[in-house]
Image 1 (cartoon, rainbow, N blue to C red):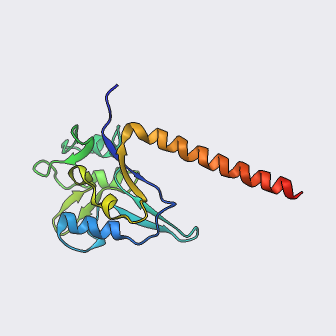
Image 2 (image 1 turned 90 degrees about the vertical axis):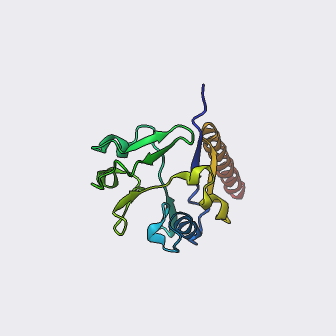
Image 3 (image 1 turned 60 degrees about the horizontal axis):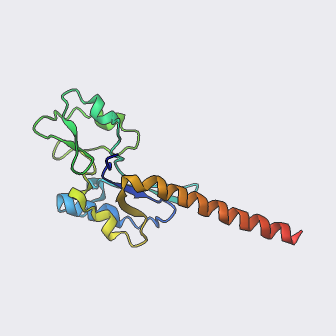
Length: 168
C-alpha cells in the first residue's frame, strides 16, 4: 500500500491562541503581516474558551475540487495537496462556499481564491508553533496518533475513577 504523503495534524487542545501561525503564513505567502491573508485561521470558541486552528484538510474527495466549474483545482501527487491553477481559475468562489472547513478564502485585492499549500512540504506554521499544536506527519501515522491519544485518555479516566473509588 502506497503512502498518502504528509498531512497537517492540528491539536486544538494545545493551541494557546497566540495566532503566530497566521502571521507566519501571511508573511511567507504574501510578505505582509496580515492574518486575513493567512491560509490557516485560528477560530475562538468564546463559550468554551478554546482556540481552534483550521486549515485545508487536503480532502481525498475534495468538495472544492468537485464543485469547480473550470477544473482549476487538482491534486499535486508529490505533496498530496490540492492546488489551484490561477491560469484557469475564474474567481467564482464556488470552492469557498462549499468547503466544510472554511479553509478556502478569497483575496479581494488580488481577486483570487487561496488555501493552504503546505508551504511546498515545509509548513511554516508547524515550524513556528511553540506549543506543537500543529504537526506535519505521514498520513499513514495519523490513525496511530489518534489511537495513542485515545489510549492516554482512557488511562487517565481509569486512574481518576480508581482515585474516586478509593475515597468512598
